[in-house]
Length: 225
Image (cartoon, rainbow, N blue to C red):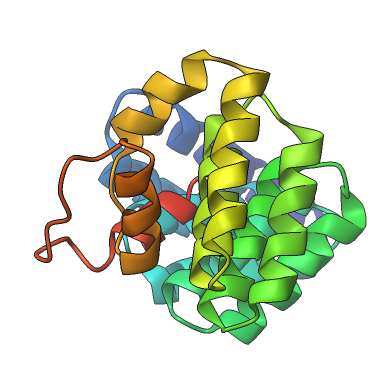
C-alpha cells in the first residue's frame, strides 16, 4: 500500500513538472490537463493546485480558480502568493469581503509586499471602504514608490472619495519623485471615474472627457500590482 502511495506521489510530481514545461511552451490547455491529472493522483500536491489556480485565473475561469486556490491554501496555509491569487479570484468574482480576507492572510505572511497592499486597496475601494483603500494604497506607495501604478491608483482613490485636491497633490508628488512619471501618467490616461477624469483634465493630462469610456477600465488597472 505504501509503495502504491509513493508511486502515485511520484507520478503526480512528474505530471506537475510536465505542466510547467507545457505552460512555458505556450500550451496552457495541455498544462491544465496535466495539473488536473496530478491532483487526481495526489490531492495533496500543492504545486499542481497552485499552478491550476493561477492558470484558471489568467484564463478568466474564476470559479475554477477559487476552487483550486482554496485547495492550495488548505495544503500550505503559509503560502502568501496563493492567498493573494485567491484574493484576486474573489475580487474578480465580486466577492469583495472574501477577497479582503484572503489578502489579509497574504499580508499577515508578507506585510512588506507592495502589490498585496495595492490589491487589497482595490478590494476596499470596490466595497465602498474608501478610507481603508487610501490607507492600503498609501502603504503600497511607501513600500514601492518607484511603481507609477501605486501613485496612479492612490490618486484615483482620493478622487473617488471626493478629495480632488489630494488627487492632484499625489500627481505632483509623483512627478517630484520621478519626472518620468509625468509621461507614464499620460500614457495611462483616462479612468472610468468622472471626478478623476476632471482631475486629469485640469492637470492637462487629457484634452477632453469622453463619456463613452469603458466602465471597467479602472478595475482593469487596479487588478495589476
